[in-house]
Image (cartoon, rainbow, N blue to C red; front, side, top):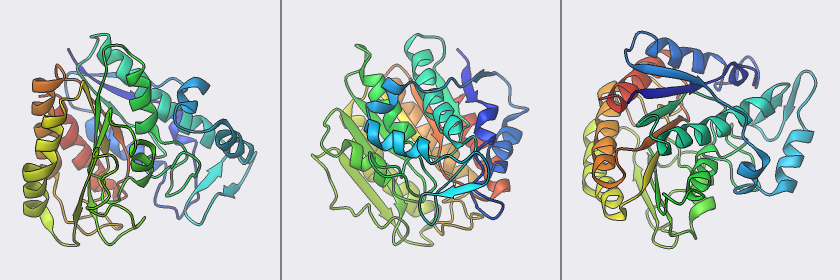
Length: 305
């Protein structure tokens, strides 16, 4: 079975402004890095349904966000998070794309998936859009998967340089979901201390600026990967942020392309043992265009092995 790439041109319509790091060029860079890889099937992302969104976000929250979408120009949610005309459809394509990818995996039509979509999602809390994020796509995907009788436990692996505070907030009282995150501290959003453990289902792996490849791999090898293995998930979801890369302007962990291939390969090995190889990944951060192209390529190459 092929690895599927989920995308949609609506994700290019979200425009937070010409100087904002979360630009339309991010997805274009990712897709350019993948264009000559063999064995990939590209599929369009559908819009998320209201039912899918409401499993994570209250109706009042989403109605408030949609009401702020401007017909022209830009509307600010906070100092970092903006809406333009087209932002709502972009966010719906991102969440809907991950749910669709999960459906493809559970139907046996693919084994792995990567959603090349934007805006990112892991900072969005149930009632708060923040950190460039409107909807929490990976949380919506996890809740969607748990509606399927085949899925009792979902593991979410997040290696973005920023802590996925929104994902943690959604699941910290839900023992059916494991959330494991490596991230830089100190750094936005300021959450993700090792003693934040939820109901025993949260594992935060903070790294210091400059820790680099060795510390990243050792931390995952010693703590993160064994936690996923012990959880025995029926599905693994990846919040794939590439802003821990050495070229990225927003983080300083100093990872290289090979580290993204390594962690993805390790996750895929765990998936073979626990969940018939099923892994769905979604783009989170990453703000250097060259690094996005090469790191996402390494990530997808590992998914496709």
